[in-house]
Amino acid sequence: MQFDVSLIIVNWNTRDILRDCLASVFAQTTGIDFEVIVIDNASSDGSAEMVKQEFPQVILIENEQNKGFAAANNQGMRIAKGRYILLLNSDTIVLDGAIQKTLAFAEQHPQAAVVGCKVLNPDRTLQPTCFMFPSLLNLVLSSTYLYKLFPKSRFFGRERMTWWDRNDVRPVDVVTGCFMLVRREAIDKVGMMDEDYFMYGEETDWCWRFQKAGWENLFFPDAQIIHLGGQSSKQVRQAMLIQLRKAILFFLKKNRGMLHYQLGRCLVVLFFLVRIPYWIIKGIFAVESRRCFEMAQAYRRAVVEILGGV
Image (cartoon, rainbow, N blue to C red):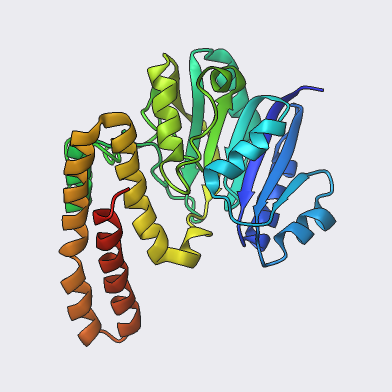
């Protein structure tokens, strides 16, 4: 049997949030044939047991270790039977038929490899998604945080597209990985996610490969989800802070060349170095001094790791 859509949800210790996500999927998705595959990355909070007991219709893969986002999604794709693959974060809530709406849009746009939808915060305010591919210029601009001071600037806000209200259909560089509807035909052409990315950067690299192969990545605003954001990564916040920058450097090394990579390393090391004294000084005077010193230690560790190579 072939389905219209195969939903793949990677989970790591988000049992209660995963429950809400799955409930919203089954409540909101009608009129299409779909399957749900949950890849549990060695959770210790009873996530797998919850899925077995409360959602027996879900295909569950239990990993004995955390394989990362890309490798876990690839596991799901290998057994998926859908014409489209939907990568959906466990910390999302599907609203008002978002999946079938996005599928209908994708069917009308055969040039699209990936389609993303509008993402909202829990209070229903806009959560800006979709962004430009990493580059040296974008790395400099994001490191200065000037996009926060000038969010309407198309220059300072170029990487995160802070000037865009996400109310219109448009081609984008990167569709954010919390909700990515991907055409099976496109996957067959360019391959699955690069498992050298453990977490962060894998959807960026994938969208780059789709675009280089002649496909489009599109944003579709008429379907909406709620995204709580970072529910797995916040459990190891300092490690994920480092991982994000390392993923950008790995992207530059793989797709932009060694010159961009080496210059990028210098920028990222500088980014971390200038923040170490800030967190130390803040830790001396702040009430939550432990967190400040942990941040300083995380930045110091990041400098050592990046100087060692990515």
